[in-house]
Amino acid sequence: LAVAAMASPSSSRLDDSSVNQALKPSQWLSPQKLESIQAVDDLTLDRLENMSLEKGAELLQQVYHLSQINHDVEPSYVPNNVQVYVPKTNGEKIVAPINEMIQLLKQQQNFGKDEVTIIVTGLPKTSETVKKANRKLVQAYMQRYNLQQQQQQGQKYNKDSSEENRQRTSSEEDYSEQAKNANTQTGDIIVIDMGSELNSFKRIALLDTETTGAKLGRWIVQLCQELQIPHETIHLIGQNIGAHVAGAAANEFTRLTGHKLRRVTGLDPSNIVAKGL
Image (cartoon, rainbow, N blue to C red; front, side):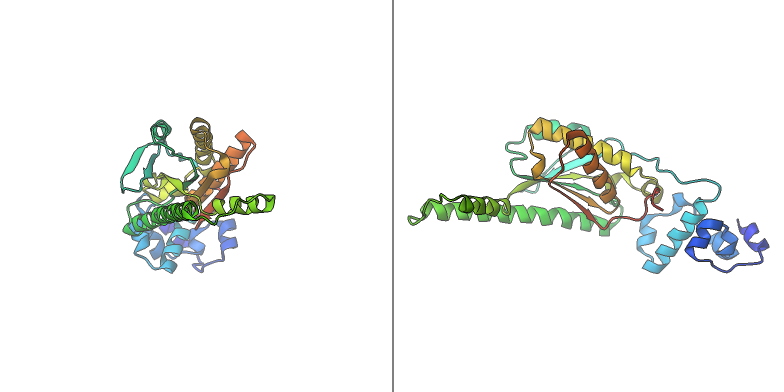
């Protein structure tokens, strides 16, 4: 590539559309830059994290366009038997491969009785920043559920101790009470730690989000059936590239059951997906 660049009369950078059409490195990279670009396998997320946003984005763009020469990038990586953990209020975790987790959850009393939040991580744990972000996300939902549980217990105590409570009979009042309870549900959290499998930029770029998501969608169907969890209580959250996986999982769940999950949330969806680049 360096020889080709030196032989080219032009070394000016073209806009993105021109690069996509021509894919001639010598037209948008100098020989020095071509020689300095590392292979995809050597491109670590730690290195990217220590770069400025502009430099990191430029490097990713260069590596991607170089990888497009003479072949197409197709998603081909599907994580197998991802680790899953369920955090508990006492600080402990239930940890197991995804294929074994449902059997373990059957042994947990009242699991899935209220809301179930499933979080799909999408960034590797090799970075302290990512570890902290993952902890904060899980802690936020743990605190939310703990607070709501305390509020429910307080409301129950006040109701039982009050002698002036009047029995509500109208349908409007009954509906209002149901809506109030729906907003103060407690719940359980399941973390699908897909990010731990994405330990290189290459795996992230080549992740087959559709196939991976379909596998997760089938697992959620099995979870609902074996633990008798209503689909209306499941909130599916995907982080970064996990957002694409979560979307595919929700689609597969609907295809298999005819029902939609209560809510699907994508947090900072990634642009580094082979199909969409």
